[in-house]
Structures are given as C-alpha cells and as structure tokens.
Length: 65
Image 1 (cartoon, helix red, strand yellow):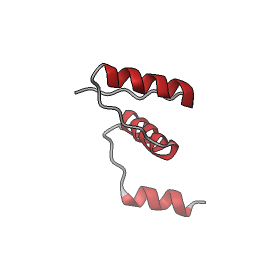
Image 2 (image 1 turned 90 degrees about the vertical axis):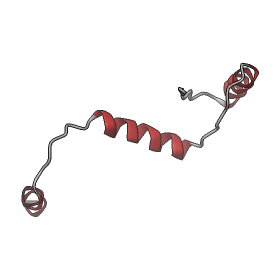
Image 3 (image 1 turned 135 degrees about the vertical axis):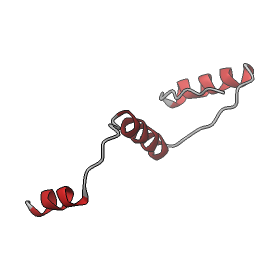
C-alpha cells in the first residue's frame, strides 16, 4: 500500500476524489489540523539525529534563561 497527500482547493479536491474512486482507490479526507499534524510529524522524522542529550545539559540551558 502507498499513499499520497494532495492539498488543493475544494473544486480540485472534489475532482481528484472522484477520479481516485473511479480508479478503485480508497479516499480519506482530512481537515487542516490533521494535515498540519502529519506535516509536523514528517518534519520531526526527517530531523531525527539519533543523538541523545543528558537531562543535566537540558536543565542548564533552561536555567540559563
């Protein structure tokens, strides 16, 4: 299975949904909040470094402000 997200205006979204259904695909509509959550999650996933930071260094940074 694969998926795509297309952000478009209402008119084009309707056309794309109809086409996808005619092609036999499942269509899932999402609202703006869910779209932003997905985009943020993707950004977070791409920026993962695999490095860890100690609690002490975080607390020092927080206390320095």
